[in-house]
Image 1 (cartoon, rainbow, N blue to C red):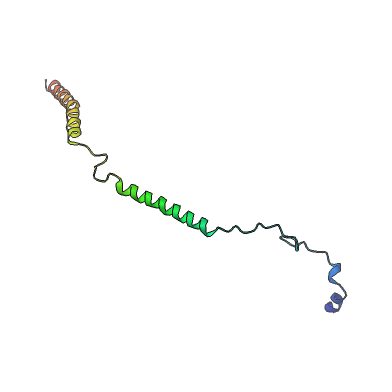
Image 2 (cartoon, one colour):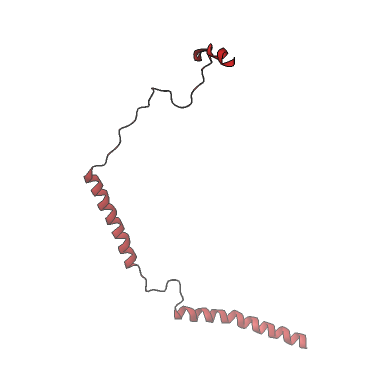
Length: 103
C-alpha cells in the first residue's frame, strides 16, 4: 500500500535540496599552467650548484686548527694570579678570625 501511495508522488513536487559545492556548469577561470623553459631550468641548476660549491669551499677554508674559546698559556697564568689575590685576602681574614676566637 505504501508503494502505491508513493508512486503518485513525483520527484518534482518534493522540495529541492541544496547541493553543496560549486554549482554545476560554472567553472572558475583557471590560469594556464606555467612552464619553465629548458634554458631557464639549466640556469637555475647552474646557479644552485655554484651556490652550494661556495658553501662547501667556505667550510673547507674555515679555521679548524685554532682552539676557539680556549685559554692561552698567558691567559691562564694571568687568571691564576688574579684569583690568588682574593683567596689570599680571604685566607688572611679567616686566620685573623681564628686568632680572635682563640684569644
